Structure formats: C-alpha cells, structure tokens
Image (cartoon, rainbow, N blue to C red; front, side, top):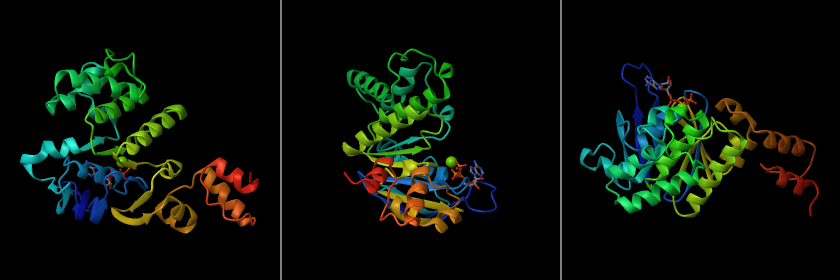
Length: 270
Ligand SMILES: Nc1ncnc2c1ncn2[C@@H]1O[C@H](COP(=O)(O)OP(=O)(O)OP(=O)(O)O)[C@@H](O)[C@H]1O
Ligand SMILES: [Mg+2]
C-alpha cells in the first residue's frame, strides 16, 4: 500500500502549498487515475510517492516504509517506479539499453537477468531495434516510451506514470495502455496521471485534485455523469461521454458509457 497520511507539500519559497492535507491509500494491484486541471498538484503527488519529494507535513508510506527513511530510500525506489512528466529529466544513459538498465543495475540485478529485463522492457514499449540509439536522437514520443521502459525494468510493485501518453500518437497511446493493462493483470498497481478522461475510464478508481486537495474520489462513470463537478474541476468530458450524456438527455436509457461499442450496444442491442 502507498499511504498518504495528512500530507501537505510546499515548494521552497512558494506562498501556497502545492498539496494540502492529502490522506489517501493506493492499494496493491489497483489501477487509479489521478486527474485535475493544470497546477492542481498531480505531478507533486507523483513525486511524493517514491520519495523524490518529502512532505512538508504529514507522512508518506510505501508498504509501511516512511519515504523519508534515508536508509531505505532504495527499497522505496525499487517498489515504486516513477515515470516523470518530462522524459528528458529522466534520461541518464548514453544509449537506449544503457538507460533502461540504469535502475535495475543500481538495484544489483545480476547480469543475465538484467539483459532479459532490459530486452523485455524495451519490447514492451515498442523500442526494439533502437537499443543502441542515443536517447537525444529519439523523437519525443520515443523518449516517453524509453522513460516507461526504464520504470518497467525495475519490476516495481507500484508504477506511477505522470501523463505518460501526452506526447504519443493514437497508436502509441493504445500501446501504452495495453502495456499497463498487462502489468496490472500481473499484479502491478498502476497510478496513472492523465488529462484524458477517456484514458481515466480504464481505472477502477479516479481521484481528482483541485488546488492541491482531493476534490473527488470515485469511479470514472460517477465523475463523468456529474457535469457540474466536471466543470468545477476544470475537466473536459471525452467525446464518447458527451455523446452518452446527449443520448441520455434524449431519453435513451442508461448509457453510462465511455466506449463507442457500449453506446452502439445501448442503441441497437444485439
Ligand atoms: N518546482 C516548483 N517550484 C515551485 N512551485 C512549483 C514547482 N513545481 C510546481 N509548482 C507549483 O505547484 C503547484 C502544483 O503543480 P504540479 O506540477 O504538481 O501540478 P500538475 O497538476 O501536475 O499540473 P500540470 O497539469 O500542468 O502538469 C502549481 O501551483 C505549481 O505552480
Ligand atoms: Mg504535472
């Protein structure tokens, strides 16, 4: 479990805290989406999960380890894989495979296992063939995939991804979501920060932040059905949710739906 216990975080010199009095629990194996307007505190929350930032007040625990416990910092890093919003901030290797190997190498993973982990992570994000490429020569989307591969190679129990699909094309997005789905099926907890409510519907639980506080904690359908809440949170409903709402307004029964298939099924039951 990742536990936020009454966490407040202020950046040095900032007048207002980026996060205020956050208490929440993220369960092993769960898939949680974190949404919210720009500046609502999503990235700050992500950086607190693996000890990259320490709370100004309150505490964060990862499987009962306090993230401020200096002696256990590597334990926390090995449990929580964090993919930062800007992949450039995360690239450390001079070539792709070296970059992906960096984390597990630091964890002391033996040589032969390292090779297989790195190859599997590179394959999972579709970068096979680019192992020897210098990271700065990759496209932005490829860099984003590289950052995800680096986190995957750590075999984390919790994978926290800060807008991992922001720079990806449609195919890249669905590739990444498929990878996340497979990981979750294998037991990894996914914490997916996204602006895209359509992507958030994949999550069992959606947490919305507003001005550094938890303003909603429930299912994607509950959130999407509450147009007023969506507005106050500064969120835009995805096209399929807007269509479902329009159909409900026309009296088409119970289209909760977020996918085109569900809408078709509601209109023309098979
Ligand atoms: N390094 C920093 N120093 C000072 N203030 C910061 C820093 N990073 C973020 N902030 C401030 O903290 C607040 C929360 O920022 P954060 O980056 O967590 O938001 P976000 O929800 O991830 O936004 P976005 O959707 O734009 O990525 C904002 O008011 C932001 O201006
Ligand atoms: Mg952010």
